Image (cartoon, rainbow, N blue to C red; front, top):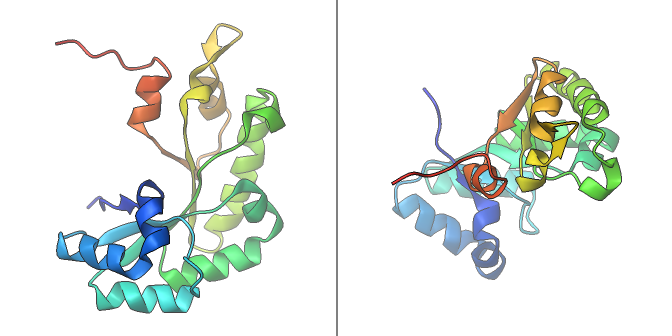
Length: 170
């Protein structure tokens, strides 16, 4: 069964003001799973215990591309400590990769393969710029055509719409 998770990045202002109070409110509202976007200055052990006290689990966590690439052992340890199934790269700066979708897909896929050895999935969270056209096609399409089977999408429909790929009728 699919797990619905609250993406804590969306609540970052509240989390910065009151980390545990925000999580308590989410638990009281009936949410059972969260996607971490930082640990609020706490250890992974403290966060896992605090979530458990509130009847919650960390289903996934946002981690920058460079950290996954350069510090994978620490990412794996943190993900396992938190109890995550997914490590999600929430953003790649478009200025750094200069629309090199094939290379980015290959790099991310290699990282995804390495994480699978540790029973973790690597996901990529889209934004609107992935839907800009390159050679007559959306970059998103080029990216996923060249992605390996172990890389998964965390599809953000707000950004899909903002990127012009969803048209509402009504």
